[in-house]
Image (cartoon, rainbow, N blue to C red; front, top):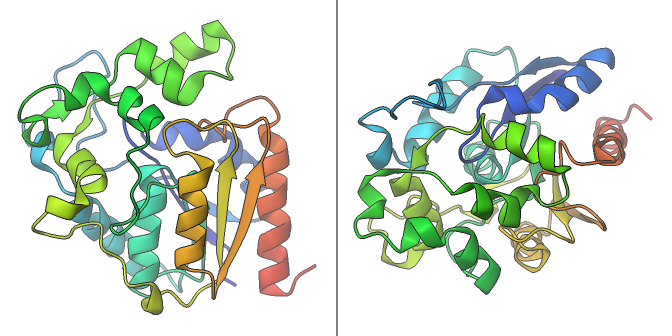
Length: 258
């Protein structure tokens, strides 16, 4: 198995939030690449790029496909949240030697708009034409949906680093039934690499019940693991080490290097 890992961040993030995982896997001998998605390389206090609001999930996937095709061999792809959905798309294009989905957003065909998810996005979804505009959660929504297991100071520090996200991408994920582009459609028959799907039992924005449906979609190649006492910010919460150690063991098992 290729020793290169591509780590794909989720909504409002950028490559910085993979620090714990990057340090861990580089110490194990992996080469880690943590790209920042299109238009996410901005100052959190600055206005968003004017084209961000209409940027599609498919735009993000296209950028990453070009990056991957410049790598020698198929990399391991680790994706978190929206990045986990992008990882599914890339895996279906035959671009991954293995895929690890951390609290992934779900592809089309899986109903994900649970009450806690709607609450997580309420300030966005309640605004007309949000699907054509850059958007960002309020601090209270971010804490409720993603950061509630972090200490208060860490919640503030993390939120202050969040940038704007594409309203179009949010629409494509949450309202796939009326998305004419079918941007989040993934043919599970095209996913042939090993896949690890990880959920946090306390996750509110990608609830474990929904994440398990993602696993079931790829059940011929997928392994499911749910971590109690973890939520959405699984790569930075207390005891994040137990999650990355599980991933490490799984990767070694799939590569035959035990």
